[in-house]
Amino acid sequence: MRASRLYLDNAATSFPKPPGVTQAMVDYAQNLGASAGRGAYAEAIETGRKITECRQLLNQLFNGQDPNHFVFTLNCSDALNLAIKGLIDPAEKSHVICTAIDHNSILRPINALQERGWVQATVVPVDPQTGLVDPHDIRKSIRRNTCFIAITHGSNVTGTIQPIRAIGQIAREHAIPFIVDAAQSAGHIPLDVQADLIDLLAAPGHKALMGPLGTGFLYIRPGLEKMLRPLREGGTGSVSEHPVQPLFMPDRYEPGSHNAIGLIGWSEGLRWLIRKTIADIQRHEKELIQTFLDGVSHIEGLRYFGPRGVRNRIGVFSVLLETYEPIELSKILENDFGILTRPGLHCAPHIHETIGTARTGGTTRFSFGPFVSREDIRYATDALARIAETRLISR
Ligand SMILES: Cc1ncc(COP(=O)(O)O)c(C=O)c1O
Image (tube, rainbow, N blue to C red; front, side, top):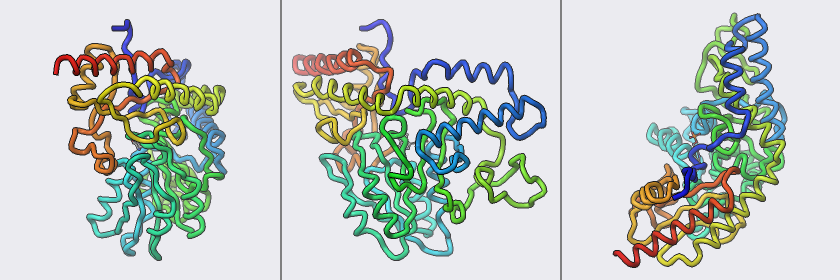
């Protein structure tokens, strides 16, 4: 067993964070400690400036039209709740489109709206081998009253990257808001809200965007705020004489004190990403993917899901090893090799039905990050090979 544990659960949250993230948080806690927009003194003003910087970095990274249209949220689920529920008018029974590869943070808000009788949903199937959605199937599902199309960009189960630009084109042609869950793609692959025709982009700060837990955002295409209802109201530190939530951005969607410490740490993570470039991160991740594929291709009894090569995929691999329950495999990986993985359904139930792992206890998931090396991946695939050999001898 190696000296240090090998963290391969970056799809849950990234670890470690880039240098500077923790220090920025400590500096804020020791030297500022104020709440933005809640005081006229220098510390409160400086905290507000630092929070604005975080929006500017996001605007730069995703080619947004206005930093104030990046609304801060608790995480990606919180952002998706705002996008999904904010677009629904209970008085009109609307139709919505999502897909079989989506995470529960899209499916559950939609299911909750369905239970109340406020929407009808079409769940578009995906290819069982690749996990890809056919944009034509999305087009065929559109109805006169379709009020949004939502999709998980990078799958947290199969690693599949969806053709969002083609789907965005279809949505734009029909003037239907297009919601993208970028929980597993933001920070891994290039994303451009304008070129990709995204109306509402949701992402966590704490995964590949390299921030701490408790951070996330929803990008709202300018103009869409006129139809997106806020889910929360309260103090904004601005226009306090107004009895209702202000209409201007980002205050329309940001009642209450900000997670200043988290956002200030997140800015350091974003600066690190911008300096390193997403292209460089993607190149490294492709090398890790190829190393994993080479390492597992000859392991008898091992199956992995999603695209076969490096194309159309991120560094997320779900595997099944014959005769092992996913939870059992994760435990052996941890106890005998110090490798940290995630077993189970990964909050995405439909895709396990599609790939046939709903009744096997799901899969064991390996997910990579920028601090994982090719040697780390070789160590992980060698561990899988050794476990597979032991199984052949002992079972
Ligand atoms: C595809 C996908 N969407 C949404 C989420 C939810 O992210 P968060 O935990 O930031 O709410 C996850 C989390 O794992 C995810 O993998």
